[in-house]
Image (cartoon, rainbow, N blue to C red; front, side, top):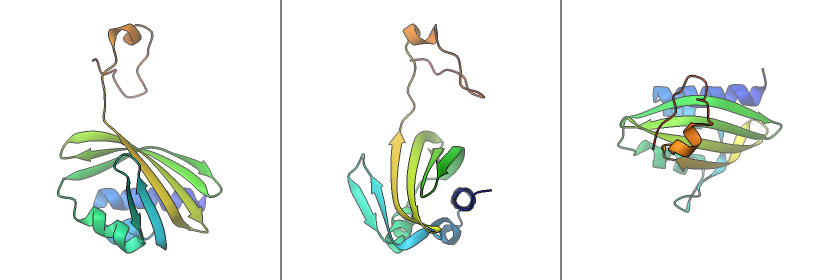
Amino acid sequence: MDTKRALLEEHWRASEAGDTATEHAVYADDAILDYPQSGERFRSRATIAAQRGGHPADRHFTVLRITGSGDLWVSECIITYDGVPSYSVSVMQFEGDEVVHETQYFADPFGAPESRIAIAEPMPGRGIRRA
């Protein structure tokens, strides 16, 4: 198994378990985390951990897919906040075995219009959400 994939699997397992030390061990000391939707940038492993540590919601992480090679890896996840799912794509750039830059995108679920449902098929393990 690829070392970086294993590091990301451990990161997401620790996120789900609430193990903040292991969750943030993957980041370089001077890592950057960007949230494009809000325009926020967080500098340093300590700052990344601090902004996540104060989250009041009950959070759960479901990894749908991890893919990548070399120094660029992408995780597709569902992050559930107080029972409400948010789809997330996390793009992580590595140097060695540490993440130096992560950009995380979030998207709310939406219903498909009837015009598309007629030609669509459900994703594996899922039903089509109607508008």
